[in-house]
Structures are given as structure tokens and as C-alpha cells.
Length: 403
Image 1 (spheres, helix red, strand yellow):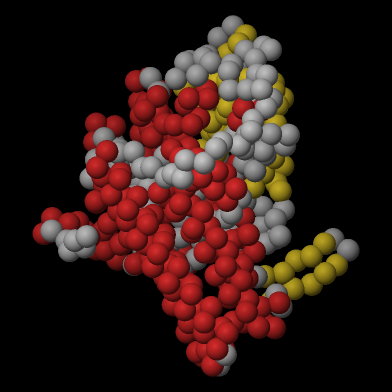
Image 2 (cartoon, helix red, strand yellow):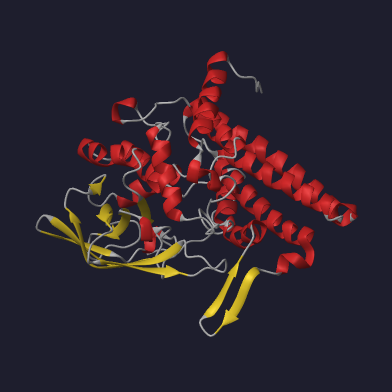
């Protein structure tokens, strides 16, 4: 592989660095090295403001067509942006599902009217979105969705419940997979609806996590409404559109993720050397193994990007990458606690009272706790292993129930 940059690529990197130097100022300085999912120690409103700041420079829609407000960057430029962003230790970002999931879905499956209505406002940072897939009795199994939507006049009326709705309390809109055909089962009879969050028929209930924060929520629909034309891909095609959305979840930002992981590992090494844990041969061996694992992950992700560049469709590298990085980062969280020793078990400014527990976790403790979820969300390790076994190794599929 040739990792050298062309003149135009070097100029693009300089443009990104210069813009970040000019705009990471004032209140945004406090976001450097902070934020990201699982780190509720940062004001989400400030992170939302940073998204709007990025939008002012045209950096939210780097992969979108210029005709709709994007930069239309090449895949290489997209990769370089995310990599340079993390190298500059720019502010950690909220999960912007409008940019990463819904926007690409609308460009692939939405009508021209839907694209023109929603994509420009997403790329301008004016409207935030959340995802309505998982349900209490179905998990992430969309084939068992029970939320229902009925067409009444010029509107859809929605009743049901979604769970694990990230940042629902700040979202303006939600994309919902609902059952629109009475009596339908499995993946049939589903539709992909765009629903406004700020209405009487929508109730949001925070889910308190072991980190003490409430990034996730339960979302209840009790006669919630949306316009009849806000169904993406046509009525009954929700399964196809939802699968398309999931395919956009991992891609150009992957090398930026690797840089972030490397920064975390470097910080761990420095901590181990400063508190003398580096002298422990067992800990030193675990750190060495972590380093080797990260190198393996990096080359696999480069292979995935090569597949994207060649035909635009990544193969099993996506599942291999998700399985590997989720497990690697969870183990890094455990290694952090080993390196910190007893201090890793103690929260700062903590108290336990009749009204519950309130305490402040440090960055490493949050990494340890939140990384437990990595092997579950976005396709659990078990699901990724099934995909790899069936599509790469050619093993027999798991037995499935028949209707």
C-alpha cells in the first residue's frame, strides 16, 4: 500500500488543520479531548453548538453532493478529514445521526421533495435526528417490530414504543420503522417514517446508565402524527430502507477512530510509566498485545476502505472490523483499570444518599464502563461472528424458525 499523499491531498489536510486552528476557540476549547459517546461530563448543548460551527465551514456534508449543500469530497478526502480531525484533538462530537445515517438514506431512497426538505437543514446543523429501531420486546430485531402506524386522511398516526433512543431528548426528528400493514409479520408490512419529536404524542423517558448519564431513552408514541408523504422508499418498503441505513453506519471515519484509539493507548502507556505499573511484566505484556491488536485492526480497516474505493460496497471487512474494534476497546478499558489500580475503583466527588448516587467519573472510568456496550450495539459480537461464519467461511446458517 502507498500511504504517501498527493499535492492536492496535502493541501486538503492543511485546509482542515487551518480551519480547526481558527475555530476551536472560546468555549469550544473546553471540548478538546472531551465529549464522544459515553462521556456525559460535557454539556450536550455545547456539542450541538460545535456541530453548527462545523456546518458553517461546510464540514458536516463532506460526502454529500454540492447541489444539496455538501462538499462532494472523494472517499480519500473523507478519510483524511476524519483522520486529521482526530489528530488535531478537535472536540469530541455527538452522534449526529442526521449526517451519518438519515442523510445518506434519503439520498439513496428518498424522494426529491424529502431530500430538499431535510438534507440541507441536516448539513446546516439546524435539525438533529434520532433513530427509532429497537423495541423492548424486539431488541434490534426489526423483523419483530410492533410499533404500528395507521394512515388516517393525510397523516400517519403512530402508536408504540422504541428503546435505546440515543439523544432523543435533544432531537427534532426521529426516523421510525413501524408496521403499517395490519396482520403483517416479520419484515413484511414495515414502513420507514419521518416523525417530528416535538409534539404531544411523543414522550421521552431517560434511561440512567451505569456511568450516571442518560444518553439513551425510551420513546413512547401515543397517537403521534406525521404527514402522509413522510414515508421513505414507499409504503411497505421499510425493511429494505432500514437495511440501507445500517449499511451507512461504518465507513470513511474508521481511520479517525484508529487515531483516537492510538491516542488512548499512548495515554495509557504514559500512565503506566508514571505510576511504575510499566515495571510489572504482566501489565507490560498486556499493553504490548494491545498495541499489536491495534495494528491488526488498522490494516483490516484499510482493507475495508480499499473495498469501498473499488466498488463502493464493503464486504465482510465491516463485520470483522466491528467485532475486532469493539472487543479491543473493551479490553483497553479493562487494561486502564488494571493500570490505575485501586484508584480506578474510586469515583471523585462522590456521595450516596437517599436520593441515589451522585459522583464524577474520570475519562478512563467512563471508557471502562461505556466500552462494555461496544460489543452489543451496532450489531453484537454474536451477530458479527454469524456474518463472518456464513459469508466468509461458508459455514451453515443458524437454524431459523419457519412461519
